[in-house]
Image (tube, rainbow, N blue to C red):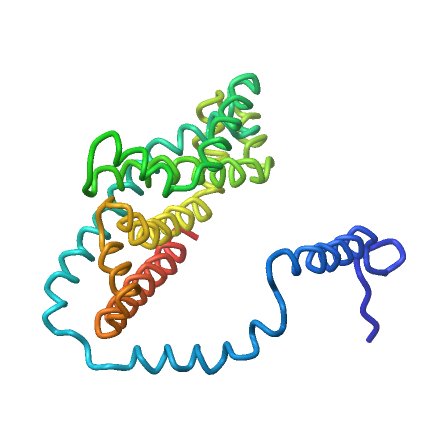
Length: 262
């Protein structure tokens, strides 16, 4: 059986070929500036194996008390930030998406605003909020809200923009107004993607909250930083394992929610 690409001549599209060559050229041009030299990786394997060996050490059982409290704070920060961000990002996405916005004159400035918010790393947001309100989880939550709103608004906008227009035209033909078209024709099609993005934002915020703690914005980031700097492998191992458990639980939650809404 002969297979072919779904193009008029059955061959690979020129755009794909061009992208492939462009990617190879970009990798070659940036490898040297990024220090990607074979000699640097020659001894990386043994050193990496040595690090893994250090992690397989008896844990510091006295550390588990503070680890549990720090993890609860980290997860709490992620949940609060994600919930606030979803409430803010959803209306923004509706105003930004071509299929749902009342006016493109409103959509374009909002797209620029969220792009600017995404351009600033969450660590910088955390530093700014730490300077404004002091140390603790509050500046971390505020930083996560800002970055999560920016990303969710963009993701939601793209999900709303690619929905099929057939159901929308169907309910429009029976006299549905603009709100009904958005509520019954567009949103139901986007719900599976939206739910996945909400759970992913929670997953991402858990990992981001651990990093924000390094600058004093709450969570277990400070403990993680100290464990790495002081080579406290009996603490670093439990930290990594706890992150894995949390991320795995969130992955399972995402799968179940997707199955329920599809």
